Length: 400
Image (cartoon, rainbow, N blue to C red; front, side):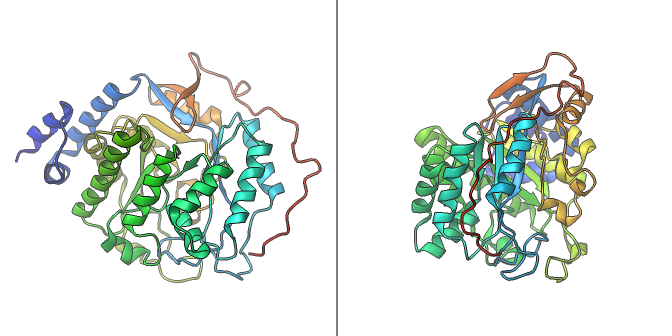
């Protein structure tokens, strides 16, 4: 088996087997892999354009009982810093997003044992009625599994009810590494591989937007990374063949580790992690290995702007989102602590600095606005909008 031959095979559009993928990933020249990934990206997506999304990450609760080893965001039930968002708080965040020309919220939270499924349904219905132009990509497979367990329901029943209430998409959070040996070590109480994939399978059948993610740097082996990518590729094959609705994109980042979690326990940061070169190498390899994926997103919030721009020449065709708000990654000393949000103007600046033309997209990667010239800060500044919260009556609050 020769790494150069495998690289040529991937460039010709031929599928790499898991064994071939492992050999190329571990024995191939990273620079050659990145160059090949860029060539494949140019073939599969519009060559001179890099897309982006104007959205906001909103965390509806930080209450969680899952105790993941790497999470610095969660608080246990009854903790003085525990919260559940109010509708007014949520509405104000969305109205700021609309002023920026935003189109989507990514709303996720912890595994809160006090929130029944009716709470989620009521919230989704209110959001759809109040802000119908906003795409609601909310929750994650682990949150869906948590609701199902609390309610004595199947994940299919939960997703069908939430979809009927207005849920547009199920983000790919919580995938980390889709290998149960890794998952048992870093998040033993969290969704296992089969359940994560099953939730995504259901969401795709229902026509929802879904994304595939991977986080490296938990001390996993190269084989375990290949296992994770292979499972994503297999589900993509299955869903595209069954109903034509698979993952819209692949998004990868490195583990963001602080020294202690929210409860003060050691993170063993010195044991884990992955550097920027490993991020670029792995992202590029994924572009070659995941031959049934179209869109690959660069992660500026975790890798920083320079590395994100380099990723645009290592397989990525999308610069992610403005991320007007982010509360989870930034808790673990990631780049977002230094630059927690990105204005549309600054995002344009970064894309053009990399040598591409920016284009705004929606969550299905459909381009909704093109920019054939450099826009000024004033042209890309937010525009005040009338509030839709007058007369809002909050439901009975649920304590954190």
